[in-house]
Structure formats: C-alpha cells, structure tokens
Image (tube, rainbow, N blue to C red; front, side):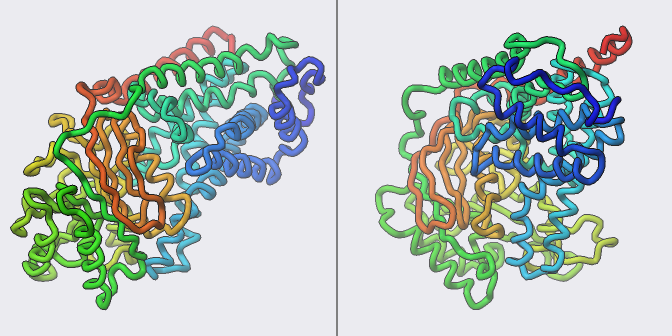
Length: 543
C-alpha cells in the first residue's frame, strides 16, 4: 500500500456537501499529521482520548465521528497488519488512559503503594488497548474498502468490546461505546433487544461511515452527494432507533408495588475515614440517625450502601440490636457488611456481603459478592505477587456462589449486586429464578469527584433496560438512584451529596426482554457471518 503522503487527494470541497466540514477537516488533519512513526501514534492516542468525551458524564457523542473515522483512516493508511495493530493500540492506550484515570484515586485514598497509582492505570490501559489493537488488525487483514471496511470495523470493534468484558480477570466491560447514549431514554431502549453490545455496534458503524466517503488510501469511486449515502443511511438508522425507543416508552411513570416505600441512605462518608477505629461508632450513629429521621409511617424498608455497617453482624449482637431499633415495623434494613467466619488464621474467611435484618435484630437473608475486584478485594496470583490489596486488611475476600434471587419477608424477590457486579451485561441475575428487581449497593467513595462514579451509575442503569427490571442503587457517596425497567431515573441523589432518598419500587415488565432470552448470541452470529462474508469476498478476489 502506498505511503499516506502519496495517496491521491480527496476531491475538492465543491464536490462535498457543505454539511461535512468536520469530516473533511479531520481527513485533512490525518493526511498532514499521520506520517509513519511517533506522530502517527500520538495522533492515534489523541483520537482515542477524544472519544472518551462521548461517554458519561460528558455525552458529546458527535466527537465519535472524527475519532472513530480518524482511527479507520489510520488503519486504512497503514502499510501492513503490524502497523495497523500499532495504530489501534495507541488509540486504545489514549482512550483508556483518559477513561480510567480515576482508578489512581483509589491508591491515594487507601494509602497503599501510592507510587504505583500511575503504573496501575498505565498497565490497565495498555492491556485493554490490546483489544482495540486486535480489532484494528482484523480490519486491516480483511483488505476491505468503502462500506465493507466500515462494517468489518464496527463488527471487529464490538467483538473486541465483548472479549474485553469477558476475558480480563473475569471481564472488564467498562466504558463501552454504547454508554454514550445514556443521556437519552429513547436511544437506550434498543438494549432491551440487543444489549449494550448491540448499541455499541450501531454507534461505531454510524460514527465510522465518513471513512468510506473520504478515502485516504484510494481515489474516491464517486463524486458528489451520492457518495454520502452511507452516512445518510446511518443517520436515518439512528433516527429510527430513537423513534422505536420513544414508542416503547410508556406515557407516564411505571407502576410501583403498593404498600412499599424504600429509604436509601447516602451518608457520604469519606473513604479515608471509613475504617478508622476512632470513627466507626460515629459512622454507625450517622446511618442510624438518617434512617430514623422523619420516617414514621412512610418508610417500609431501609437500604444502606456497600460496607455501610462498620461492625461484624455475625459477632456483634449489640450492633445488631442497634440496627433493629431503626428497622421500620414489619420491614427490614438491608445493609452492606463484611461477613466473617472462622476463629483462627487458618480458618478465617471474609466476604463482602449484603445482609437483611428485621426488627428483632435477626439476620433473615444474606448474599455474598461473587465477582470480586482484582487487586481491590483480592490479589491475583497471590503467591507470585507480594503486594497489598487496596481494601482494608491483609486477607483476601472470598467469593460467593454467584447471582441469586434473594427472597426476603415483605419484599419482592431481588437480585443483589455489590459494587461493580452491576456492570456485566447478562450476568446480573439467576437465569433460572427471575427476580422482581435489582439491588445495587456500592461505595464509589474510592474515586472522589471524578468521572468514575458517573460511568458506574450509567452502566448499572443499562442493566435495568436489558433485564426489564427496576434497579435500586444505594451508594455511600453517590450516585444513589431508583431506576424503572425502562432505564428512566425515578429519583436520585447526586455525587457527594448527603441525604436520604425515599421512593416507591417500580414493578418489573411482565415478561423477560428479548435480550434476556437470547443474550449475546445474535452478536456472535453477526461476527461469524461477517467473517464468513469476508472469507467469501476474498476468495472471489473482490476485496
């Protein structure tokens, strides 16, 4: 393939509709700046960083057009698969550095190996970038051009997102491109059919279509407005998705369970204070006071965030009794707690858990977190990596058995999700025992006032749409919220706010969503069909 400096220039501006200045300007930038070597890598990293602006909390979705089209131009202009892989990796590296910088905050909060905070972000970004690099390599190796190249790129990108969400230490599906639509209730309705990966697929395709219009590695096949049929079709497709989503949304609020009133307590306790021995009693008192305030005759059930209970319920009957005093009559208090079992160093085990306490102080139900955070709640390859985990204590947490429906007195069946268990599409409930709602308790105080908590909230919200179930989210420092089965926020407490949130509990949809029934199998089928199509095209000699 010729070097990028020698390929034919795109047609003059007179041949391009006046509505395309961003596209042509980006193409010109790629042409001037993307010389082989470090300048091309720097440009790719910059385009990746810009793409983060499309995600929560910014939602500047149009930036994906120059970002993803620019990446596809760079892939097309690469001499070979190795160069395309490098371009994709640098794009991903810039993208994940900008999107995951907030993880470094946790080291400062924990006071553990603070020197390693930048290194942790760099290593995670470098690892996650391999998946975008693989998508770039796959796109290049197909030898496609024009519309076919855009299709292959979108499918390869989405397949890489799915792999990243499944393969890195149990999966890390953070900041998938489809989350950029969380500002629109109508657009996210598509996930009830395709899941978040399907929304990513159409988003990447639509954003990358300009790369088929202004081609830097070949003369344009056509001139004039006819060349814009692909972007126009993509825009029409997005409009139809919005219209379909708007039609799916009911006119009024979702119906709620009668005689149920939840109180979510957001005490907003700074993480560096949370486990101080001299402050634990004060933290408990704060939760108790907020629970009891003006709740008489209104609240039926109370929910505290992840690890809100600073004492062991298993071994502290006095603490259980204090909780029992604020449990609404006939109701329950659901709280995050560290559960402990065993008496000596050999047998001692700990779990990050959710426990439900009734008005007698009895624990009537428990769920143990199953999807633990690597390096936060346990250290992978503990025998080989002599480093401390970020959470308090030296012992790794044990994992629970997996998603389950928890049946508690006076409450519809619920699927508990602790912390980032809510970010995994299709893995948030027992497939054989449908719950009536999702309960996500979390503590995002580790990350301060950064983009991380906003991203976490958006991802949890999409699980409600995919499953057709309401989501209740109690977070120590925010964002706490009640979300209906259509992903609409019924009520919320913002990040870094202190207060309580009283709300009803929206009912689930009558039947499972299409996504719940078929999962990600259609995505796999699309990947296989695209691969087969590319093989057939190459065999016919018409790339």
